[in-house]
Image (tube, rainbow, N blue to C red; front, side):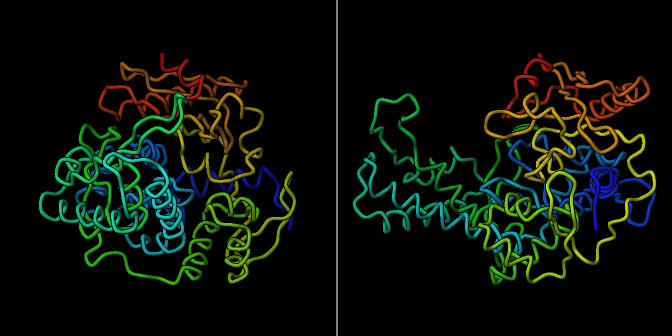
Length: 399
């Protein structure tokens, strides 16, 4: 079966962008958006909110806050590719076993190696014993005083102030504390969770909480291979048809793990324009919905899951990669027209939108883009939104 780029863009709009539209599976809740997309990128706190607001008119910032912190139906996890995501609470065991556990093992091995080989202040004699004691201090501090910021944790768990010392004269080799790598490790291992922000909704600073505040009893253990199968199925349901390389990139698995997960699923091979062989769940309806992409506009935030969801992106990105990505591969905020990227946008410090179209889409489309920019910014608190990984074009637009 041959799937054209046009067909893929129509499916992208129907399955990932136009979620509040009337149809067989319209989405009306924040949880519904996350379920349809598997996970929201959460490295930038504002992106979680903007990814939801872009897809379902009628939802507001307060709705996202309620899902995260009142219902606690969504959880921030360190998972695929050692990236921060927001996932549904029910999916946490699958994501943890399928992705986070492997990240946690790598982070633990790295931290133990650093403790054993890099000079510290005060000196560490036994890396394993020291790390176990540090983990216990963090656990006890959160149990007695939590929730806490990283700085508050350091005050109540003094071991976190242990510092790695520079070993070279290079500018990046500076004194750094144990706090960040240890909290990242405990997050990947599913023992602590980033909770409420310490500032407004767009703040990237969070209080740390025990994972039991979201999942009483902790994260249930699943077989890792089976979890990878379930995670691959969920991803293909939303992002398929796609290539094996796309799945491998999104999950951070090695090629053997990606192939093993697909081998356990009922998939069929398809031919994708430009990239060749791809796969799709046999149960998926691959016929494009008639007119699904026609006239559809979306303004997605930086690191949005749709913009970052595939390794091979030419079918929706076109010639705009250099203008929209930074040198580390992070995409800025993007303008979409009929299932493809046609420009960039930003929210200025005064809360107003700035839009730059990178190609001529016609006056009607341009007017629709401007109207959507006004709709999105009208839902915010009147302030600017700052990306952690700004592209040159983003900086220019934001001013």
